[in-house]
Image (tube, rainbow, N blue to C red; front, side, top):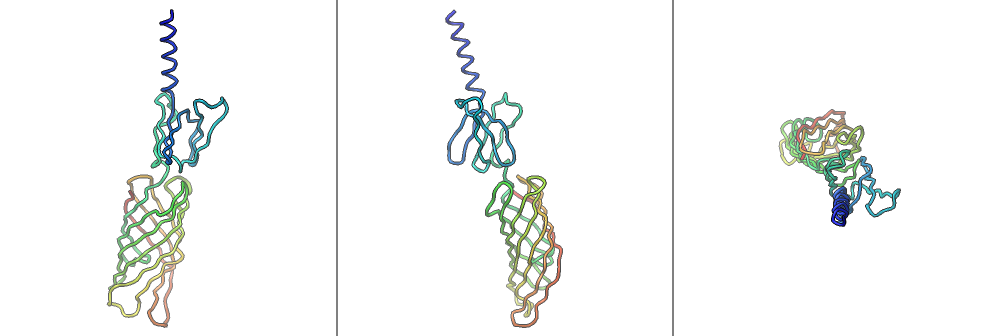
Length: 219
């Protein structure tokens, strides 16, 4: 009889240990218990040793990984990459500060779950002159995790001597839409800006509206 009771107790303890979700935080803390809910910003969690109705809310930005117990069919294993978009993008641009054609690299330099600040550098061509261009944009999530409303400004400096008048270009303000998914996928951006040709001397400069497109992939 004692052996049977011991076996039942052992199985119960084993199931209690196994039926846990594990949260790995970025500060290297590990928490075991049961995940109650997960949304785009917060995980609601109950520790095994906590009172029945006591839960903890943890920001997703503080979590490195969640490993769910297999019996918890409501959830799947998630890592931090499930919540933050891809940080890098390479693209071919048409229009904008880069000119008629440009090759660009874009990097998220500051980010939260629903917002990121990005910087772009590229090499472009406008008529017979080549330039090095740069953008900085603020990107606000809307609709889903991969759709962003974009605001920013940009500029470029020519390093050729083909055109003796226009050496500096400006794109401001930049207002557009950006598709930047969570992993390696198609990248797309379309934006409108006021494009400007700025002369070296005190002569007149020229500004006009322009629609621009970047196509590439993110990673």
